[in-house]
Amino acid sequence: MTSAKPDVLLVGGNPLGKVERLGPQLAKVTSQSVWPISAGSWALRNELAY
Image (cartoon, rainbow, N blue to C red):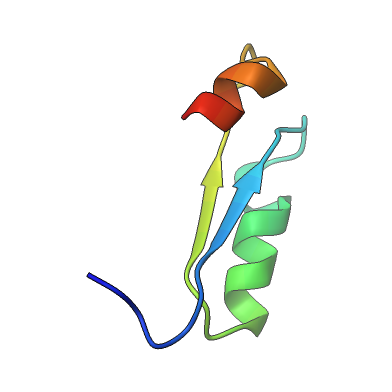
């Protein structure tokens, strides 16, 4: 299914609390869907493969 507006996929992680991270902050200020993916132990290669 396609959307009339683009989605945003964030790759990467950080030690901040969930509500302080970029994904939730972007979701508050944009009408686009934001899909943050990461796990603290994932390497960039794994995140890109996901």
